[in-house]
Length: 337
Image (cartoon, helix red, strand yellow):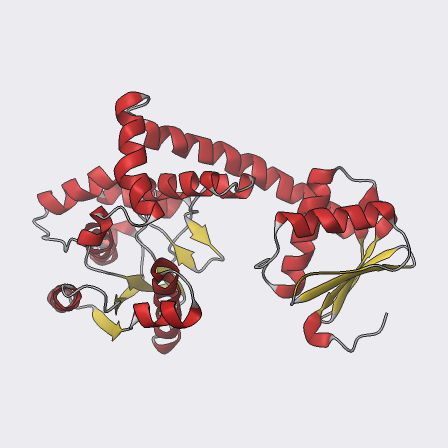
């Protein structure tokens, strides 16, 4: 499995010489295997990869066993000589205060902490132990939510040249076998077997049912679908980038201005992507922007009746004036057009 992970690293250029990685390690089979494998790759000079690793561990304060999880990871890091950074966070309290689910609260808490350790240790990448099964589960979740084509790509090996997933091409059964062969007694989170969360239901009920009744190789099948979708999505994104350059008139930190006539000549699928691409360039995110907002903007541009204001969310205002589309960052609400 070490060679398989090394192949993934080289295939997607996940790790480069001089990198310093923060590994998110819970103590479960996935993350402890990632730690063990990356440490072995790191110290094996024949791999020609010179990088360093530190470990970040979050105790969500939900399970009594979490204290033992932290102790296990701490001892493992001590044994192999890797820096260990733990934190305890009351995830349930955060979830209640922000009126969000514990899964979302836990994920936000973890990534916030990983970012802090990234800065503290002068690291440049965060390694997460998502595997091929996680990728398939995510795609099924996105399907159930009515996701677009981007959701069918699932979890990507590398994101923003910051988050890397060295185990993304390994199946869960391979990871469990690796732990067994290397006598790694990984910690088991029993809540993963409780079907109270959507992901757990997909993992413990839906996928086993599909395997038994329809396709025993469903994980590989979904992974192939993901790769096909990724190729087509990347092609469309390149087209969007070229068309954006053709349409855009002005860019500054306050607003972007686009040629309305050129925009209206495009097909709806390109229009949708150009709007999302523009919003991302202006705000850095499309959080809060839903399909209905994009459709409203496209309709507004097609009708082109006078000056129109549309605020998809509180962060951006989109309006038409003088045959131009203005995308205005609401932080600069005093901007006049």
